[in-house]
Image (cartoon, rainbow, N blue to C red):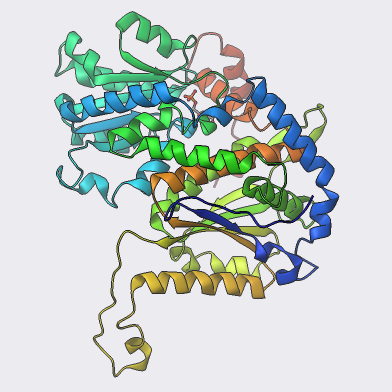
Length: 480
Ligand code: PA5
């Protein structure tokens, strides 16, 4: 595998780059850092995983790879989002996990800060977006109390059409609409996104004839941000989803090559794998230095955890694989987590997400020039300060032999965010191949869902109920 310099020719302001200098022994030292020889030694595995992924892509087993190219779906969503704009003020997503986190990441990254608090004209006439990804009764009731049913459209998103949290919210909202609207009117207030054929939501769509979108077969929840799951809510709040997909498609062209030195997804997967298995660093911290990207870290946390936390290898051996993903936020967590990252155990890899440009440039007022401890700030910008803080954190980590790398976006826009999400998805699939586990299933999540059904008395889950009763009988000796 030869080391070459990639010619990343994205249009201006639409570039992203991956800098892994501080993962390498050259910067960090041999004891903690990764060497080129270690990457070279992994060549056979890298080529093997590349071949496996390509074969599966070609045979249609991994449709997430081709999501950037869905022209028909794109057009349908864009048209429908335009229509919705004129008839609702609030767009509520009911969904959880992979049916919610991508949408939240897109909203935070690509709409204005405090979007829901802005006037309608500042929102370009687009509805507010609420993602109800929790069933906390206080929060859900408070959300309903805030909204006028006449001006609210609800997008129920569940691939399985079974998830207890989402289905409960749907039942409550249907009753809530019932109180103010006629049966016929209610039809226009629900949009269902679910599997094309299976599940209870699909049955409800067929019975009650709601407008619906399809979660493509073979794309798991956490890989579904670029399907109608994430695209419809994004389009409703005015995000340019064509650019988002174009960015993902651009990253696809970069990630198609099998030379790890030119493929950022493969390289980051390789480095994280080596950091875990060769250097015992099994905590992966994602630390954006832009609040806009903070929920990308949350989305990553799910993608990494559910995809890679596995008991069995592909050949059925018990392996208990799983690097733990952690989200942090610069600069906030410099004053919360950084002490641990710098001086605690050598068990972490920190991935910074940075941006050259922010939407705004804010100058720090020059009010106390005579005071050395404050005066030096005056006349600089918050932009300079946040860049300086990131560089300072990066340098301190590197000096303390802590592995870190940076994914930099020239600006935060749909094209660069599309690239970023796609790169991380490919990286996840790739590292799953290196670990020799299946990154596309989630048996642990399903087990939890089954127990919840048992406790709530779902027919057919009586055994689960009994198991839970046996396991959770409380010994008062251990309760204070
Ligand atoms: O990524 C996944 O598969 C999960 O996080 C699911 O998205 C989550 O459990 C919700 O499932 P569903 O979309 O079927 O309601």
